[in-house]
Amino acid sequence: MFKLYCLFLKADGQWSAKEEALLSELGRNLSSASWSDLSEHEMQKLTAEFRQRDLVNFNAVAALIDVSGLTTLDSKDKALCILNLVKLGWADGSYSENERAFVSIIAHKLEVEPEIVSEYEDTLQTIAQLSEHKAWLEQQYLPVKEAKERMDQLEADLKLLLEQSLKTAEIYGLSAEKKAQQGD
Image (cartoon, rainbow, N blue to C red):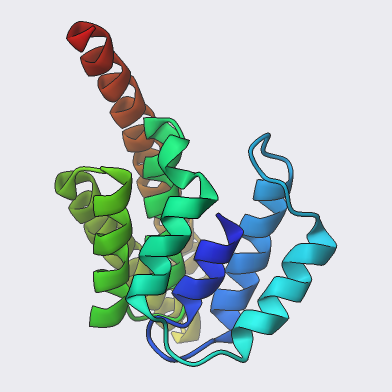
């Protein structure tokens, strides 16, 4: 999955420091996951290698999905993979058409419903806008109490949006399992 995330960072032709910071965080989380077989050192090597590459070849991405075993993940982990890709897409403050196309291809290959993808894209766009507002608010000269109240509310809103996205992945996973059981 980490290779997929690395490839994704080149989808828009740029590799930003914010994207790389999020990639590192996701890599640490993957290291503790039972389905990751890469050490932190290997992830750092891959990061350096992919940073030097040109734009992503979408056919190579589809092939990577086929050989990497991502299609064998459970529905919840597939949805979380899509959520992480959308997070990476918004990490630099914009979500390009190439990034959107990349996510669409991956979601299709992983059989994640388009409604889930749309929900994640909308949620992460809202989070990006709230983050911009937070940055603007930090530059304003407001009374300390008012500034603190606004910042606390923004932080709570951001946290809630992320929690809801994670809950969506959980619900999606349970729903897919239930459908599979009914089909048996």
